[in-house]
Image (cartoon, rainbow, N blue to C red; front, side, top):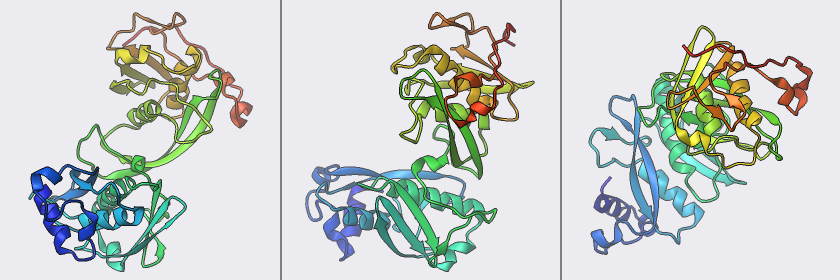
Length: 328
């Protein structure tokens, strides 16, 4: 969406023209002033979403931001390969904010969207609107009733992290998954088991999804991160029950006060929760001839260790130690 076009659209919408700074001013000077927001649109093949940047007046209220972003979602983007995410196949009835949650109601036409398109529309709306100041979640309803997914399950409050794509690639058909992820306790010497339910791009493996979630950190204040968030995941593959996790050298730079055991078994325990994984091997830039923090030999294959878990799951007393198998 061009800056000039954005100004023109909002200037010609009487209810919204005051929301964008600079209507009637020099476009080049004003286009990139204010607060930047990414507005997400759907490609015309309805296989992916992509964003364009808009700039809103920094003095806008929360309500004004929401109104402006909803208007942008219903307006044609500059890129002709994209189309508006809302306002054509269905209409937005209204919205309200309740303690950090934005509730959006759409009309019954929404239920006619193909399932894959519906996920893309939902991802576009949520990813756009959670950028609003003070909004942590978005809940969508249809004609005042709960929105359900393709399996008939109610779709609850969503965040941008509800929709996981593959390193910026096109968002494709999604699947719902519930993961058990292990993070650190407050003192960094024990593991805390957490659960996270999200929709993810079915073109990536669940194993990769687990590792990506561990790198991004917990979504609860009852657990703490274990891995340097700047770590790049170079590859995740599973063969014969062994999950091979290849990370870049940033993984070796520890910025959190957690023990090496907590780091290694945060990854191992989380992956072994999957039925496809029994053991885990970690490599750095493809190398396993390294010792992590002078303690863990990366030539080893590591198995689940529940002795480190400091929550109710301690009833599962199985503790497994690394085996001396080499890489494959």
